[in-house]
Length: 101
Length: 486
Ligand SMILES: [Zn+2]
Image (cartoon, rainbow over all chains, first blue to last red; front, side, top):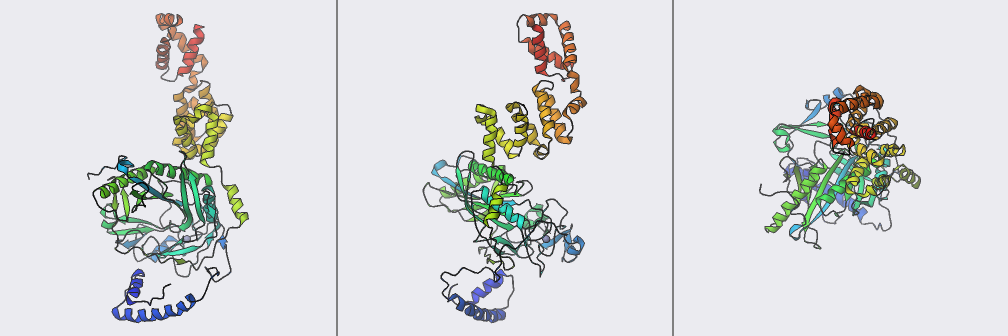
């Protein structure tokens, strides 16, 4: 993490990545709020963590696994009934503009 | 297009191609990576879906133990170091993932630092082989199936969440041919571990190629990633095209742009995908709903024991059956085919049952390998019995192939199958009768043959074929003629 303060441009970039359409006023509001949150988190970054293993999960658990045994899937009609649009038993989505990531 | 993809550019004009391959391999588990939906190719669309793989709110992923097992088998076979690993969320917006992120291993992959030795003796480094989930399948409607011209797209989530291992090679590959060797050998290894069926045509093994060119010993050039390589043939063609394209760009004073390019099989060229100006920012972060995977030594040694013999060792064993002949290029090719199709056990059993290795190799590498799935399920005793009939001359090679096709098609007793084709009519007795008639009909030719004119063997064999509507066995006819001449 850098110490640099979150800018309005950063907030706009993050909003774009998350496909959230913000108005100019909202951008001002949330950029300010987000900056406060990040400042708070920066206190943690300031600690000396030399020799401390990174935490990937708050619970002291590992190897939570399940056996490779099939379980019933959902009923297709029920699934597709939730979709905004359906064609040929598939989810219909608008024309895709970007590349496959 | 004036550019011609071809081998001329590869290594020519002092340019050295540098190639790395990324291979995605679907694992042969019963169920998906994080849910109990079936992992099955070709099922009705959206029948293998549940709240987890549809990304419905409140659902939680639980890791499939068998997928970890298979991933470790691949790592073991590729001489990787197997490490504690962690899953991350790779965030992006594309309808093939309903969660809007893909769960993948990022900076702590399960397998690192391996290598793969190719049949030509070269060695290619493996940087990592990590686990991740597959995406759904999108079909673009309208515009001839091209993504940007499509009116809309349809999504089937049966494949979303299917376990994958992505094997990332180091940029150690220097030619399209070596890339092909690597992909083919890797495919054989994946099949041998039991982790994958390696079917490129069904997409269970998918290859992306990173290609750049440079002056030897220079820094690495700018690379392009080529996608949509659905066969080993496309892989070779696409790499050759791309090398040639980059050399042309550089020699005309231009710069190669770092791009993702799509291989168009019909046009025989790579095409830059339309890209946003900003690079993808996946905002990886640890998947909070999954914990670390730490395979202990017991599990690792169980996995090591489950990994079968690798293709290189199996080829060596078959070659040994053939003696010095096994080292010739033609035989080595056939041996590679047999191993690739997992038919070495079948062939070895036939040889151990007394069938000559060259005959067993020929039938196994050609006819049996044409139907590998069926051949693997073949009854060994029936296969051996058929080869014995060919070996002792009761069936001609042509007849044996016909019977073998039947045997592969529907199984059964090869002797009965041969009778169904009327091949049994050519037992020693009836053949003897046919030859009696031929001698009577062609006394002059017979005399010349008896006097030592061996060219007439061909004449009599031809006549015997004609008289029996091609059912006679040439070798048996020649043997009978020789017997009579005394
Ligand atoms: Zn599911």
